[in-house]
Amino acid sequence: MNFIKIALFVLPFLAFSQKEFHVFPSDNASKPGKATGNGSLNKPWDLQTALDQLANVVNGGDTVWIHEGIYNGRFISSLQSTNKDQIVVSAFKNDKVILNGNIDSKRRSVLEVRGRNVTFKNLEITFLGKFSRKATEALFLSVSGLDHVSGVNCQFINLKIHNNPGSGFGSWKRAGGSLIYGCVIYNNGFFSRKRGSGVGLYVQNESDQTRRIENNIIFNNFYKGIEVWSANKNAKDEYVKNVRLEDNIVFNNGLPAGRKRDNIIVASDDRNGINLAKNIVLRNNILYHNTDFKNNQIGGDAPSLTLGYSTRANLENVVVSDNIIIGRNNALRFNNARSLTFQNNIAYCGYVHLNKAVLENISKWNFKNNTYYTKRNVSFRISKHKDYTITDWRKEFPIDHKSNWKHIKEFNLPNVLKITQNSYDKSKFTVAVFDKFENDVTVKLTPFNVKEGQDYNLRNVASNEVISSGKVNAKGEIIIAIGDHNKTIANFGVYAIHLEAQKVAKKSFFKRLFGWIF
Image (cartoon, rainbow, N blue to C red):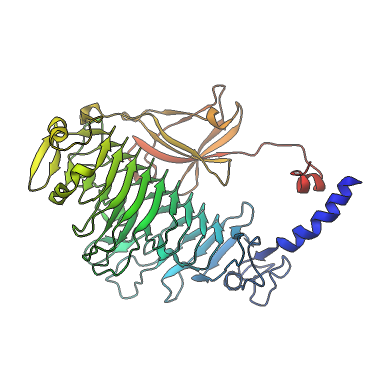
């Protein structure tokens, strides 16, 4: 009797406060989405109609389910929650939902977001079929995958953004308080007249709220991987600030256009000294360019991390900690900074390159507990000034006293560089593995309470194809044979591990609905 009373009391509030709407492709044979629909399962909307809804129809706490299919078009979302709850726009269950921007349109994004308190989850954003990637061709148009133009407190979770003839994701200055989590962003860009163009993720922020970029995989874009950056030389206000990049894996950017580019750059080109890159944190990221460690390869350009650009726009309060930074001669570059913390990092590079402008503030920097692998012991190069051994570096500047220098021949890393369980889908993991000699790698899953006999499959993070499958062994481990997937050399690989659902006893409707009560 008590159960029935609780159910009768709670059900009306659930029905009133949380609504579900449905979207189908407009060309679905049995249930086409239409502008004249009402968003019900029987009369679903088309995608653009769903994204046009006002808050009196779709508001915080509601979910817009997008059902399986290809949605051809370039879309604009103006959904806005007027309460504190998020509107959720997500693929329905495990449906594969693709937004295909390869249509005749003048819009410059496959998905443009102008709204607040909206979460976009589990969508694929791309160009399908043939399209131009050359700016010199008459019909070419640069089109980004996703542009978050305005609206605060939005979330972008577990998206796949790839093969767009522009940048992958623009997270622009009026998008304060936003989260980008678990996204796979790759192979975006085009050939401009002079070089490859199109970055994986472009970030600006004018808000005092922190922009969070977490647990993403960004690789093989035509230009740079992540730009926390503004090219505006005459800025009037600040909008490269308050950004946190954590647990991301960023590798081989620039490769499709034939020249290795920065995996991450944090900087501003403002000549007024107003729009400084400040309050930026880079923590626990992996930055990698293809390198043959067996043969101590180090020559040529392959920048992985660049800090600062214009000497009139010094970095302020930038923290770089616990990162792995791998490239070639110029993998690590410091151009200017007023206040900078660099600690617990591992860098593999020809030299640590510094612009002469750093001399103005270098004595204020906080460097410690770093390990530098370079080709010569004279490893710190301040351009047009002097090269330093780590001993001379410490003597002249009061920094890096607990750091180490090693020759590149000694370079090695743990086999498992990072394994992260997806916060929004506990059955999925991202793992980055390394073996200098290209041997198989053992990955332990016991820290995540994964038991012996659990079925799993190992997947390519780009194509999602299953590379191998099996059961977790008695030690709670799986074995990964590093291959050359996604154009990496076979000493480094990034994979998705999917745990298959285990059969459980079915619960009654009320137990499933009100399990949190009992």
